[in-house]
Image 1 (cartoon, rainbow, N blue to C red):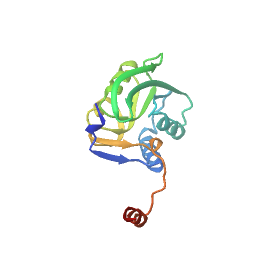
Image 2 (cartoon, rainbow, N blue to C red):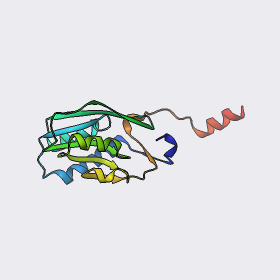
Image 3 (spheres, rainbow, N blue to C red):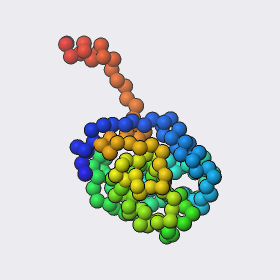
Image 4 (cartoon, one colour):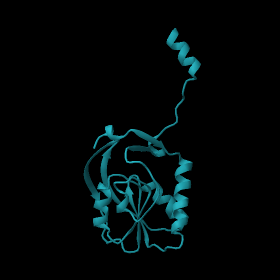
Length: 162
């Protein structure tokens, strides 16, 4: 899969991510989990926020690489876990094509799998998500963004005529 399949962009601020995670946590407040397994790297920050909101102290990781910026390649599983997920909350930021989700589901078939955002192709693989996003939309997460000075339009135009 290449970056050419993305025709839309959805930018998420730190504040929006925190609001979305808290809203997802409201839906899980009655559940009792042994711990959290975060799917790295995208699931790390949502997992930390969820851990705080649900008062979960035990956090582990499954380390998988499937993207190089906007290009999806093969799966590289760098670290797994030694249990089937019974009683655990499995967290990722997004389920996209389902490639990573399928691999993690095989590792942790009994975990409760949540994502903050879900695209149609991967949505059936998670137990719970908050927001559905179009398949052709690239999500700009706050950890991938930076704040930069933007020159006022009038100065840009003046510079182009000089």
